[in-house]
Each structure stands twice: as structure tokens, then as C-alpha cells.
Length: 373
Image 1 (tube, rainbow, N blue to C red):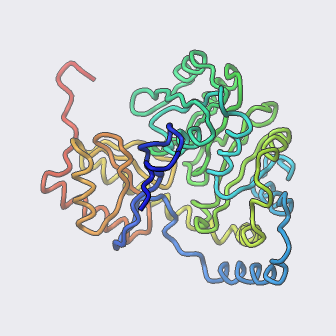
Image 2: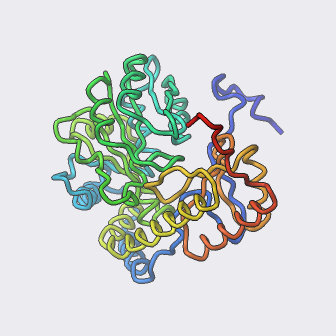
């Protein structure tokens, strides 16, 4: 059998692994930031009817520009947006790939503040865009001064800002976004995949859009809407950005079935988004309980929590897995990430953490030495 190394694959792809989290059949799966709540029966029926209505016309191509869907998305987002300032694709990953195809590419660079979403450098690689890993500060925070200094140093063509940030979970202060816009020579993309889970008072980058034609806000229906299997991501930006992205999009990239299902889901958004408060409650419960047990935990505005286990995080990951709980090892030494699921899933996770902490497989960080902070 021919192996990958036997093929004339690009040199920069040799030895690499595809993106993905383990897909294991365990009782509690809390590793991919999905919404653990199933789609309500009434919504499932509405989506089914919408799909059925499309079946007889599957011999025809779908609306290439997804105009009705984009209008629905604009209505959901508000902020005075209309369909010409919204674009949709198969997940926010494809949206961001299209942005790099249009504004990145060979001879250009993209910058992100790590640790952050691990797909961004892979999207850069796939589009021939040079990736610049910038740094976050203490406790994974990012201040305006830190961000501006690094953007000025590298002058990237595309800047990625995640708010809330994955895997750390904390949202950005809008002053950071505005400061980056003031100095960035190219596009600024704010990834808001988890925006619906943000704590009260958090300001979306959508509020910064007016007057900033180089700002793009990307979102997804995978998380808060519980529509991960539907694969629908979108962006909000100046209409000129949407026009630029259409230059690189594949023809008929969104199927008629995807568009119909997404529109039905948006029409029933109140029912789908009703789980956001419960998920946020479980997230805050995880944060409070882990801190009560002496662990360091990052502040979270998302549907997941990053927490420190100390030492080799893979040991704690395997110990949790042995107890039927699958969390995410994001490759950050000493830290793991857990999705906030149902109350029962949170109970199971916290019980497993208690067990392995008692066995010494998770240890609180050492107390600071006298005279240090």
C-alpha cells in the first residue's frame, strides 16, 4: 500500500497530523465544546419539514449566495446589519479559510495570540500564509499595549483575535480590538464562536464594526445553537469584505439542505438558545468548585473551562478517561480543558476530579514563596 510519504505532497505538509480531538465512546464526552443538550423535538420537526420541502428540487443547485439565510443571520445579530454585511459557509473554519484566501496567501502573514484556537495556524498553512505566533501575558490575558507592540513589530496582513479565547475562555476588552485596529496594516478578524455564553456586561466586537471596514467578526451556530452537525458559520463585516470573500468561495458551497436547516433553526432560536443559561450555570459551577479545591482556573466567558492539573497533563487526562470522562488536552503543559455540559455531566466530571485529586494525580499549584506574588 502506498504511504503518505510516497506521494508528492507539499514539503510543508510532510510529518503533520490533521486537526481533530479524540472521538471515543465514553459515558461523558466533554472535549469538543459541543452543546450537550439535544435539539428540542419541536425544533427537530421544524427542521425536518424544511428539509422535506427542499427534496424535490435537489436536481437544481442551491442559492449560490444564500441571500435568505444571510438576511436571517443579520436579523439575529442586530446592530443594524443587513444581508450584504453577512456571509455564511460550512462552519466558521471555512469562513476564516476564505478570509485568508482573500487577504492572506503566499508572501503575506497572519498573526494570532497564543495559546489560541489551534485551527488558525493550520488554516494559514493550507492557504500558504506565513503564521506568526504572538504571545499572551500573565494568566493568558492580552492587554492593548501587549497586542499593539506585537502587531507593530510583525505588521501582519491578518490579525486573529479570539473573544472569548479558546482554549482559555476569557473575552477581550473592546479597547484591545480598537487598539489593534488603529495599528494593524491589514484585516482584523475577531473570532466570536462562543459569544452567546459571555458573562453579563461583555461587549461584542459587533459594536465596534461601524467605521471599521477592515474589521471582521466571525461566529458559528455550532455552540450555543447546538447545531454542530449542521455546520454553519458566518461573518459580519463591511459589505466590501463580503464581496472580497465571494471572489474565493467555491461555487454553491452551501447546500440547499444546509441553508434550509439553518433557517429553520434560526426561526426557533429562542428554544435553541434556552440552554445557554443552564450551560453557563454549569460553567460557573465548575470554575467555583475547582477553585474551591485549590486549582488554578482561567476566567471563562465560553462554554468550557481551562484548569491547571500540574505536571504532565496527559496523566490526569488518562485518569479522567479511565473514569469515563473525556476532556481535552490542548497541548498546554499542566492544563486541561473541559466543556460545560449538563448538570449530570458536570456531576460526573467533578466526582472524577475529586477521585484523581485524592490519588495525587492532580495537585494544586505550590503556594507562593514569602515575598513573591
